[in-house]
Length: 151
Image 1 (cartoon, rainbow, N blue to C red):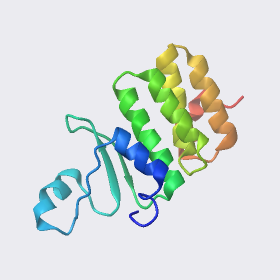
Image 2: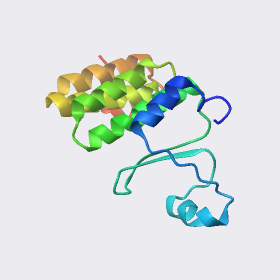
Image 3: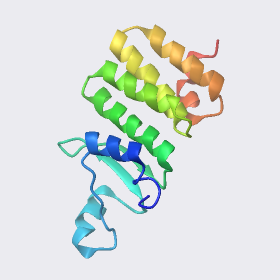
């Protein structure tokens, strides 16, 4: 991450503008409390917390820059969805879905959720989930949405 992803200008800008990033050395006995509290067992682990310490998202492993951008937009989507900013959440999930990465199905799923929450209308949800079905029929995210059926 230090050699490739974090030096990427887009990643750095998005991180600095929206997150309070903390790096914890899991081998340091002074950080053992945090490692235990958050159940960190592998690095890198990204844990996204609200200001009151609630965990909204966790992801593991290396992300190349493009995937990290998608990851960060999904995390921002979760934060804005959690705080009732549904239009803003939609924008973050839409941005994440537009980035060619393995995170596109999840972004599309939550793009639908945020559309529904924003508009109080199932049309946005169904449109996004049907697009998810067409593009990623074998994904776990389509499985979660598959009760709506394909059309």
